[in-house]
Image 1 (cartoon, rainbow, N blue to C red):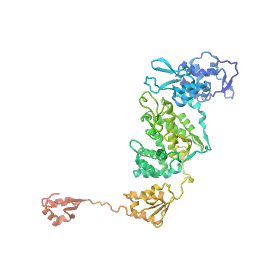
Image 2 (cartoon, rainbow, N blue to C red):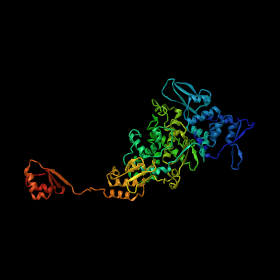
Image 3 (cartoon, rainbow, N blue to C red):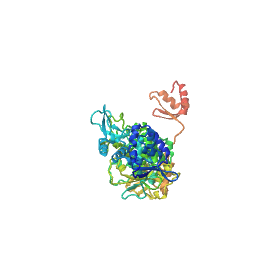
Image 4 (cartoon, rainbow, N blue to C red):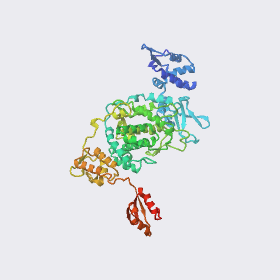
Length: 620
């Protein structure tokens, strides 16, 4: 019972969302009365020094009846406790509950919510006492009395290892209570935005480059230079393709010497492009515009998660490759991540922490499955350990959320930046052990105009004129088939290598044999000419136009004929047959050529020849 004679601090409780209060009561009703008593223990104690008031329609403060009842009654029924607790155990008022917890207990709640699995060692340090106690049952442990009953449970890193080497972890029994704690303890992350970036951050925006790079990817694929490996993506052939593609990669300066990091954007572009092509009809890919291809590839990243871990967590081993698909962890993760991106509607920069927070808040936790891509279970982790190849160390339960789930989200952000959907800002001085140091270096993101269109936030899209590359990269000789390179970093260098050969690094020449080295049909010639006009010069001098026309006119030089011919050999010892073929006038009209005991006959007249030879006793 609360002491009403004391002067109390007044705090406002928000009762406007009655639906959330009803849902809260329904969820809490599954707890035993003993568990509910522990949940409300500190709240009931707080009634001695806090006056919780709501605001009515007339803007007047009042104490809700259920709070009055619990403040004056010594022993409340379960229904009364449920009515009381449901006012606080919702997103609007849960912060009031957290404030009533002792500092050490509140620290446990927040840490267990953040990490999902809190190690026994860290829990003991936060609480100031042993969290894991012996229940005096066969090989069973429980939670100490300070943390109460029914809130937390103990998970072992080796469920069936009955030795003394177990690592115990504290985790919430209720995912609902865990996520409610997470959301309310980090509510300030809802709005971590800035119009001006901090100093010394590197900004990357691929929106303009993308429309020049996609035709290159199309050409590489059509020529057979882009293919996926059967067992892993990073094949030697793919590395050659990455070198030829001349795609603008993230600005690493001299931070990394790792090939994977130096070609990370090329990697994300090419792999997601090829995976999209595998799942899409050829005629759709071939007829798609660059903008349509961007939409298809981004949709693939969000909709198809069977290759998720292989693509975005290549440095983590021992993830169950079927787990993320069958239990839909990653599918739900991508849905919540997409919803998080859709909140980036303004031109403001949004912190990575806010993106991670919103992604987790949007996650659908309607089953026991958590936001963890790999959920530790008694049947999976026996004999298997998640391992970080970059750091060469195992990943512990309490690190899965940060080193697996959050790392994967950051990797997807880099993939979205590769496709021009978002603009990123990162700290080039960061050192990290993720798939790339860039995942740890990310600081801020914001949607590009392209991203708003692809994600459905804008009805139309047009590449700004200021972002179109108007620089002249090549100069064509008007008298000879020579090409001077003015910009060594031009994306047109890819096309140049297909239709010309270098004399010097800055000067290339071509002729019929060079231009046609990869051409076998007229269509191939047309493709090369279009490639030239797209990347080298749209309106070439007259000598070049004549060169192209000459090749087109000379294509199909040896045309197919509809008439078919048959060759037959004659026995060199059969002089009589030779004499018949040489002198019979009826046969001679059907024999087009006879030389070296071989005759050439039009197929349509083969039966005529056969019938004539029958008069001499011969058959073909």
